[in-house]
Length: 440
Image (cartoon, rainbow, N blue to C red; front, side, top):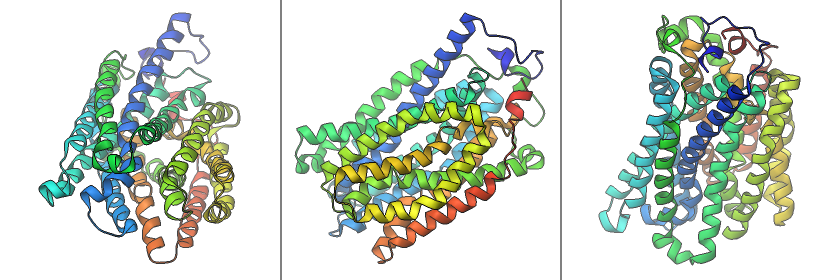
């Protein structure tokens, strides 16, 4: 496997894979992405269960204020992502992608179990939200490292000529984590009453997440490494100073389009459930079912858009994403605001997610193609984490704060503006892949 990802090994780009090599690489994609699914299930279950556990940790009478408090802690988890992106990116570039991915999923397991076992505010007072915050910070650190290492690994191990298609499975499993999270909530809603869910039922998904993380840990231990000793011992490997000295433009380009990509992604996924309940006034169960269907369709879109990027190029995919985002975000959010029919709401959300798919399907590969192997995990992970923390993690909090201030539509303008920024940054993307192709 190393022959394809080590620049010191001579190799012809057109050399066909053997059947054994294809099987090995496809298995590696499956093993890496399954761990990714567990990581994101654990991270997102917080967002989908927040409606139920918010009163247990923040006993205020106003529903929006409770959601703002839980959204604040959700955002705090994102603020740890740059640290995680740096720490695990450095680890992946210097010690190997496999080591980084095994450690990140272990930390996620611990964070989920802590949340599952944390007593409520009624039991231990202010310690309850403090422990909740600490657990989310640990999970944020884990996810901050997860993205860069997994995106790098999957782009390096993917089959040549189909890298967009295979790398899209990072978001298949990322969205799959969201899908499983909302599915778990929907299933619990069928068997438990709302008082039971608020009292103790919300803890069940966190226990499930911790247990599945253990399974992912063992799967990741079977992975083959894509960066060999020569790559890991290169001068500047995993160093921030080297990254900013030689690849500053690539770094800030990734931050720029990640900011818009993360913001619109979280707007139409995790925040959308709350928007349907809090603004559209849909029943909680109906909103959960709408998001369940929307996320399922969104997940299926990823390989299709990833394969499309293999034909038209990553730059065109990014320009379609950001350009269409500028044109559609405001009208779609405005229509959703007054749409009480769940089927119509579902159609509007799917339309928005189709636009987002131009970005999510190539998110990992378009970042990986901009950095050489010795700083690839660091460059991808840190740049993504910075953009994601500042704009993705704050999406719910900003939306709820603007709603609370009586100017909810200002949030639509904010997302539209960031889509325009992403469009300008995408214009600067290279027309053809660079490092990921040439350093093999």
